[in-house]
Image (cartoon, rainbow, N blue to C red; front, side, top):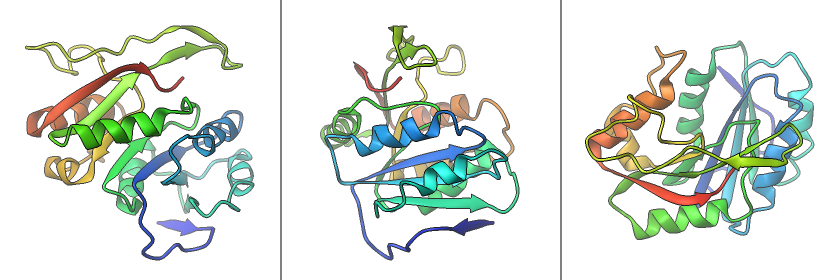
Length: 209
């Protein structure tokens, strides 16, 4: 289903896996990758799976493959965002992973903050943060709408979580993971599943835009 296009890292381990599904995002994916490279926390891997883009996305990702922490895989056919996310999770080497859209960028301390949050909250299976709305040139416009999920409410009612969600693998696996049948609302579904099996934590700090 996927073709690996850079060096196989074997059994090398890492503390944080950043998972990026891409389809035709050549305009922004370079900035997304740069934001991972610029992290204060350096023990990470970035896995990009391209879902059969028809633009120059793959060429842009290949430019960064001189960094051994970055892996690129290419789907042999377009399978959609959710199924690509499922593939990404299966390829991650760390016990903590986060999904980053290829048109978003992390703040320089995002992985450090998230890793620390997971280490200090071992009971939390899902941790997410606040974010910043930006224009097309990444100029901040306003703070996002993320917040802690109120008691008695769920993410199915309102979208309290943001796009950069981080998971503990062992707790994520208790849920059955992303549902491949969902083309849309896979984000609401996975949060709802995670809430059912473990605590969910909100970091009240903008960590991506």
